[in-house]
Structure formats: structure tokens, C-alpha cells
Length: 263
Image 1 (spheres, helix red, strand yellow):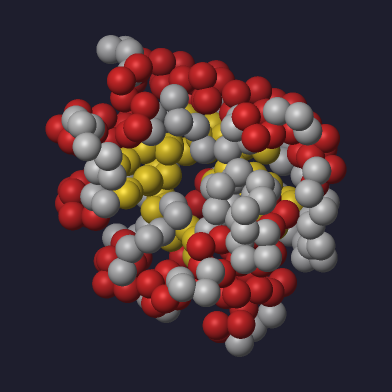
Image 2: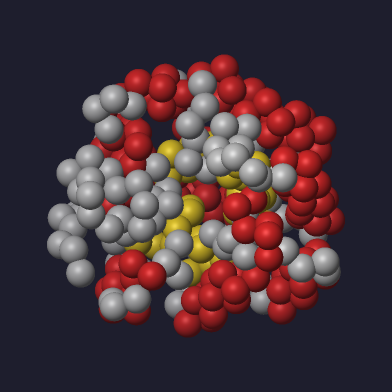
């Protein structure tokens, strides 16, 4: 387990992947040591049916863990025909399912079926609206189509691991959504992320790790975990001339509001 010098309390990691193989050796040791201590809550971001089952099992084991259910655009080759019905069964089976996600569009690689991605994204948004759940949006190199769909449906939710412009961030906020920032915000070359942050009011800001990926400055090249959010909070604090603990407390309150969690 990596030593993390985190003195801040009340961290809410709004997007993490503890089902990743990077955590196989010490997953439960890590979660057991930090949940309810420095880390108040986590939301597991599902990427397919198996990942959703993992998230539900995690939420049943740990009082401070919650989960989403959904199909990531990179995993649609294994999408069953009855995926909406299966998602509805998962929603009904566990009260700690707090979002539909991680869903969205990813045009990074050649060969992806864009029309299928748009259809599945749209249908999962419709499911979220039907069940009054927020969505967790993944958007990579697909800003125009993502924003067109969000304008059409106007769901509640968060655009996670935000990599867009100041103007896109401002429009996401105007739609009533939240924006999540990862450790990328702390990188020395993160001018675009810092600019986008300027468009995000305090009450629409979420912090996330996307762990085990996106480790912040000071831990780059290492496996990321939820405790490392303190580095992102310190960066936000330095840009807004407030304390890092204030950033942590505000983003905790925001995430609880979005996901319907009542401490």
C-alpha cells in the first residue's frame, strides 16, 4: 500500500474503479483503512454488468461506499440486447445505486460504432430520468455530440474527468450539471483544466480520482487512490485563495446533494 500523507478529512471521491486489477493484492485492506476516516464516501463507477455487480457488492460491504450502474462506451461489444432491463433489475435490487454511469461517448479509437454509442448513451439517460437518478458522463474527443445529447435531455449528473474548454464547462453548468476534476488539474501543463475550473462555481464542483488512474502531482506514475484527492483540493484552494479543507467540505456537500446521500 502506498503511503499517502493526507491530513484532510471528509473526502468524497465521486468517481473510482476499485474493481481494477491494480487493487487485487490489497483492495480490502486499503478500503477498510480509509473509508470513514480521511475518506467519507466513494462512488464506484461501473463500466459494464460485471463491474456493476462488483459495485453493489462493495456498497453492501462498506457503509461509506455507493455505486453507479451502466455501460461504458468502450464496452459495447459485449452489450446484451436486454441491457436496459438488466440495469433496472440492479437499480431495484439495491438502494445504494445512486447513479447511471459511467456512460457517454468515446471517439478516441478508430473502429468504434458512433451511432451505437449515441443510441446506448441516450437510452441510459432515459433510464436515469425514469428513475430520477443522475448520470456520470464519460466524454472523450466527442464534445459536440455529447453536448447535443445533454441539451436534448437535460439530465442531472456530472461530466467526469473534465477535459473540455472554459466555454464547454460554462455550458455544462448552465444545463444544471456538475463537473468533476481529477489529478490532471495538478499537472504543470494543465492550463486547459485550470481555465475550465474558472467557469465552475463552488456549488457545482466535484473532486474525483478515476483511480487507479490519474494520480495527482506528487504521486504521478503510482497507483492512485481516494486519499490522494487532497492534492487536487490543495490545487483548487491555491487558485481560489481558500483552504483545502473548505474545498473538501464543499465538494463533499455537492456530491451528497447530487447523489442523494444523507449523512
